[in-house]
Length: 66
Image (cartoon, rainbow, N blue to C red):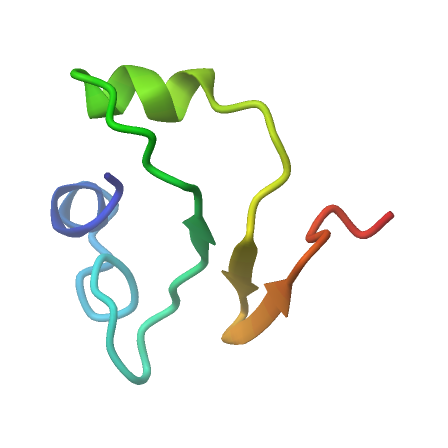
């Protein structure tokens, strides 16, 4: 959802907006439950995530840090 176009708007195309080596990318994995509107499902998601990546390091399980 936040990739190439926001990177262009910030004039950070060489550092943001892609998933590849040397590009900053924090990612979150949430389960897809088959909703008709994926965007609405993402906005309504309020459960713990399966994994996330921050600064290139993957955090699994309870990624909340608690």
